[in-house]
Image (cartoon, rainbow, N blue to C red):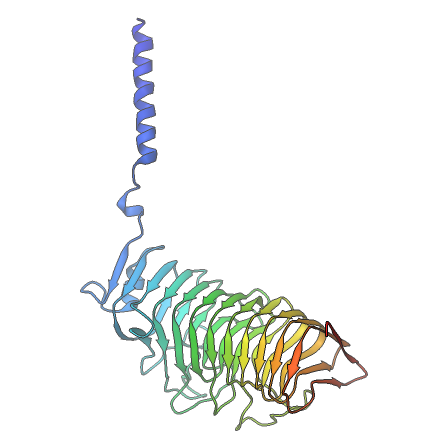
Length: 368
């Protein structure tokens, strides 16, 4: 046998074996995500664990109340022991972020963060002039929130401080510039002072699935808002959102008065299979949109209000409340097509048009 060939064959075999073993062997412990437990001797607070964690690490929160603000600027997973057992609670004094706003939990720096099985809760104790609670969870700086099986509640100030754009349970992105994104599912968003879920800006988007979003019966609130943003709202139950005193000018005139809604959405948002109950407007939509299979029950003014655009509603159901469908034309002609939409037991108009500035609003019905 050729000795050189034998040595080469042996070396090749050793190399192949090492490659094969390397491909099957587990990666080093240093590259594996760690789990950091709160509270523990090393991590007495949520923020201490966040600061110590590496990107991709998991933070496990034991049952208890964590009275602190939390800022996350890296990819992490936060998991509690259950929304009724683990709570991140607003501290007595909230610290403002770089833009002058504050929140209980904030995501920034393009971080991708999963939060589940815990509660984020107020109230705060600020005023409109100083320190009012801005949001329960805030997503900005290109960050992404994955929120599931969680609760965001009591997002308000004590006493009430109804400031513009304050006390939204979950605030995603910013306006006129700024971006964030979110997947929010199977969670409860309740007792907020401003809005339940707000998605702001053309670069922001959110998918909102199977949540319960409940406003207040004493002050003005909106449920789920998309403002120049995109996304999907599906399978949610949204209730008790309206324009209320002391806000001025609440009323049914879409040109001179103010209305609030369970879902407010624009072009690029899909609204499907939601249940909207006891809001002032169930759905208030702008631009171009198709809605499907939503159920509207006892909404005070109208179940659906479509303004300045082209709209199709397919197999939506309206039962009770003040009115069925409003079509509003204020800056462009508005067309609304109702396809197999059922409207029953309303006390006012089943269909009503509002026109201003020479623009027309037209509603057609099919499938009856």
